[in-house]
Length: 198
Image (cartoon, rainbow, N blue to C red; front, side):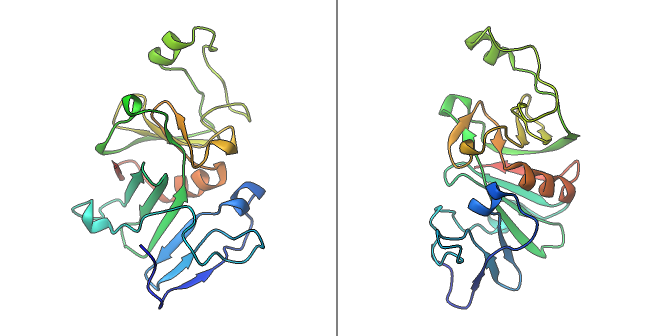
């Protein structure tokens, strides 16, 4: 769906990493400003080339108590609304590799972890017994710099170890974000924030 002509597109400025400059977070604020990915010339894009769908929190949540996160698996984007409904953040994401690995429905954040340790799930280990028992914090950690554990066992919203995963079906069920994006989201959300996988 195209944005109404009354909305402006502006390039996100600030201390973003090179990865996020290639595909920065989008912001849909109540003042109708949209921060969109830059095109190849560095100018703000006038089109939704990443095919993000416009969502309204009211269509997915009864309220914004403790904020709300919508993981749109089809358009590979994570939407966030704070409790005061002052803005609408949209982040490009990775999604599960297959339908069998995909959980949908309503859950919530149950734990926030900085610099998490990654431990393969039993299913991952069954498929690949050569996986390490765990990988500690660092650039090779598949969960990146932050993890938001969900109410479903083994499901997380987390950072990534490989920026090529963003925008692709690349996970065993989790939703992955650029590390600077998940670090930003991590500071905004709290335990109890509502999450819907759609």
